Image 1 (spheres, rainbow, N blue to C red):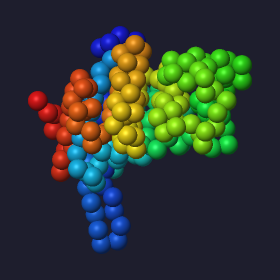
Image 2: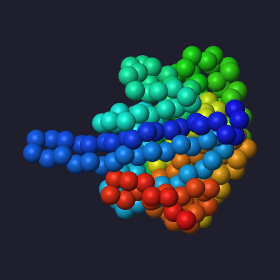
Image 3: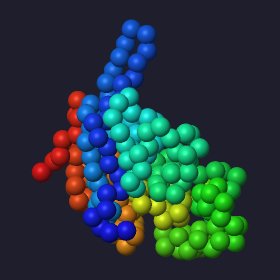
Length: 229
C-alpha cells in the first residue's frame, strides 16, 4: 500500500442521539481523510464525542448522515456480517481496558482474530507468536490475563489489534488506565509499530503529550473537528 493511499475517510458525518423529548448532535459535519503511515490524535473534553467518532470510523456504529470509507470501501449499507468482515481484515482496535478474554492465554487471545476469519490453528498460532515477540511478550505466551501486569495486558491488546496486519488501528484512550511509565512504553510501542508497518493510527486521548507526538492533531469541540497548529 502506498503511503499516500487513503485508509480511512469520512464525509459530512453527523451523529445524533435521540430519545423522546431529547435530541443531541454529538458529531456535526465531520470530514476526515487519513493516509497510510499517518498518525492522528483526537483530544477533547470528556463527553465531547471522541469515542463516538472512533466507533463511527470503525463501523461499530453508523452515522446519522454522511459516509464512512475504509480502505476504499463505503461502509454505508453493509450488513452486520459484511461490516464484521471488513473490520476483521482492515482494522485493529485498542481500548483503555484490554478486553482480553480471561479464560484464554495471551497467545490464544492474540490468535483469536485470525481464527475468527478462518485461518488455520497452526497459522494463527505462528502469527500470534511473532507479534507477541515484537511487543516483548515472548516469555508470557501461556499466561492468562490475570497473571499479567497492566502493561503486559495492554501490550497483548496491542498485539491482538496488529496480528491481522490491518490498514488502520483505532485506539481509544489506550494508555488511560496505566501508570505514567507504563503508558509511555505502550505509546512508544504503538508509534514504532505504526511506523514500521506503515499503517494509519488514530488515537483518542486525554494525554496532551502523547497527542502532540502524533503527526496530526485535532480537537473535537462542539461536535466539530478543529486541526491544531
